[in-house]
Image 1 (cartoon, rainbow, N blue to C red):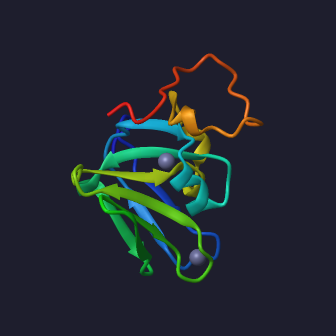
Image 2: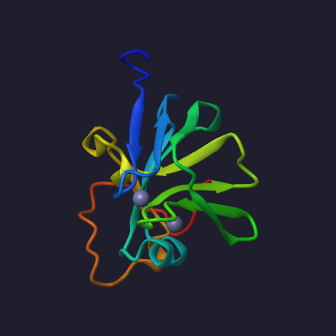
Length: 136
Ligand SMILES: [Zn+2]
Ligand SMILES: [Zn+2]
């Protein structure tokens, strides 16, 4: 753990599932896609992407759901907090819900993705880049 590469801890609402993401932050985005919306029950989900090899669940066992043929989402089986997203075609990266971090204010999203699916009453303030779909 260094100043530029802080160990980041997080977990679910009930505390049963805890994780550690100790790699460098790769990306952070607000995702407006319909799958994130359904999975979270929220209008958008803010994600931080870390290297998979620095990410570990340190307590509890999340439930895994294949939300599409290429992606898996993990959440707490007790309280339902949405924790991670991982694509089969990007196995070296894992997305973590910023809001489940213990210090979510330390990870600041730098863009919006899937804005073509944005709910019309979600207003984007305009200073961040917007991508119609997935920029990757
Ligand atoms: Zn929980
Ligand atoms: Zn999404």
